[in-house]
Length: 433
Image 1 (cartoon, rainbow, N blue to C red):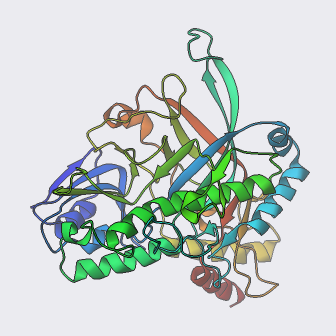
Image 2 (image 1 turned 135 degrees about the horizontal axis):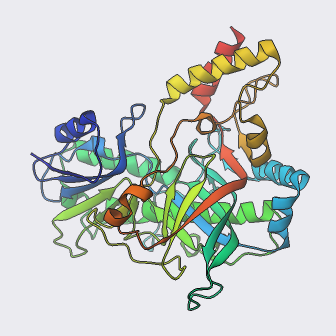
Image 3 (image 1 turned 180 degrees about the vertical axis):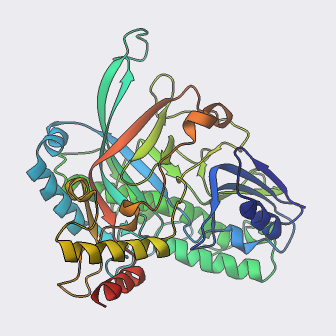
């Protein structure tokens, strides 16, 4: 029987699903907010360790969202102050963000992210488009007020400081889809992980594919940050040539870059006997620590005692943190609620979403347009699909972040990927009935 450890109380159904899926040689650590998504059937906030030499690896443990994560850069200047203070200017910035960021959710012909295959040096073989690869993506300006000293060495002089960050959440796009398809084929053929990721293959091997898909998400997010900074009027941000594209594109230099759905060897030797797969934040391959609250509430950034972004995380959960906040309602049930609210609003002349003024002031989104008269439905995350972050206050010591400064970044000017096309079409059809 597989070894299963939990930091918090978890539903019995989740444990039963893990026991059924894992082999006797495997291990799972359930982070706070661990869950089994009823819609996709994928685990969230769970850290797996798989025996590398045993065959029949459980395919249900792996999410197709390889390379997903969040990147952020700290920003300041008159252009930031203007967005925060001037509502009219902020709305113009929201419109520009919606125009410049490509989205697979809004346009079925758009393909984002680099191709999985590269040359012998893991460099791109063709050009690619940066953008949103799922309905959960977003990019925009976030701000926070938190207490810290003017300089790290000045004890006793802490005061409130205002900070702003450009934050993007996105994945690896087509590289993730291609890798997941090839990886699932290899697993269903009965190969062990040590066989699948054996070194020495050609540029199209899964070992090379794993390297590229792990970096592809960060590369996509860095390019989105460049596009967003131009749309928001930033005069200049630190950037470097994207070496994996032979310098064809420039990528933002990120201060924070956290990765989820990461598969890696626990021991980097060739005879490694264990692979770790984390559906939470894997601090070993991330830069900085960050966790998501719900979309309206924002992002939780963890800084060191001295206010540094870079820090080492040590805990019993294999140096991992929860990434997503708990889901409280399925997309199917939430879509039914949205349709009901829009029908009621059409009768009484009110806005369907009770938080209409806040949402339209801070957010824009890109829905697929089926007809010009269709309602511009807000992304489901803005209707309450997820709860707020609540693990830190209770489990900070167990997770190794009890001494961290907690900075809660609030959305100020954010573009979100729209409602998934299939769900949007069904909702619009129900409204017209």
